[in-house]
Length: 433
Image (tube, rainbow, N blue to C red):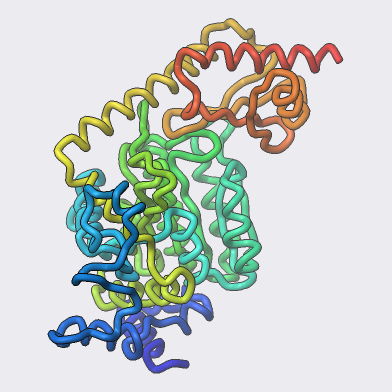
């Protein structure tokens, strides 16, 4: 093992031996190089005042070399904020501003010890880092039966983990914290579990309420008290889009420093929060009371980044940072939030109006995010999906036998009634066939 990896492991062990035990073999072996090209370039940048012949970019007139056909379109920004490599951890000011945003929007983080966010290439990359650092072949990865299918690719296929699902909802359509607890306690012999919490949930658009959130935290704590090491990941892709009574902050704040056997990780980003999907700017943040442990996890995270993408895109980090600092940012974001809330409320009003009766579908609770799910009562979801797309020009997502996901995020409010009229018509067509 590389001595640098060994030093990082020693820091993690000293800070919390349970967290060391959570690491995968790759997580134990990875490190961020302190010697070599990166460190020598950094030293030259600091001290080589005449010529710096170390950096792997081309320069001209003291600035990164660039093409006018590109810079002409981006003239509001300095070439130094666009064309050079961003640091592997991301632009320092962006990391600071995002941390301040996290504290502002998650009051339960006040007084908690957590790392500076590291910039990722959006949310999937953050989840992939978690998988690389903590998931070993055969580890249990626990998440609900209604989930984002990329979890299976990221953990099950890439890292050969065992997927453990539990029903998202109870019979009275509240979050199934007992199902989560049962799934956790079933891992007692393994002594380890990775839990993925995704709120607002994709595909249902559901965020638990305050009491449900407390029950989730209690389930995690109970598992830890039973001797299970738990890596609990808050996948906060749709954070902030809370339209009705629900938690208004990430459970990361409540899970941070909960128990020595619990490592809380937050995956979030500008991708959906700031409506910049193609910019691919996300963040990964760890919680621990031990600063040396946090520093070591950050170094291992940078090792994964260095070994995969090297660093994130510089221009998009600049664009996001500039937006977050803009005086108009809050008002513009609130405007878009109200549009999204109006669409969600319109869907719920339509479904509760009685227009479609109660014999063709019910719907799962939704109060946030981009999506909602119908539970079809009379026709298969896949048959309806195909019928709708080929006969009505309407695209939806079929999930399992009976669930149909509809993204109201990409449909104008005044078009939603027509959309559901078409879904209803499609069901009646299939019933007659």
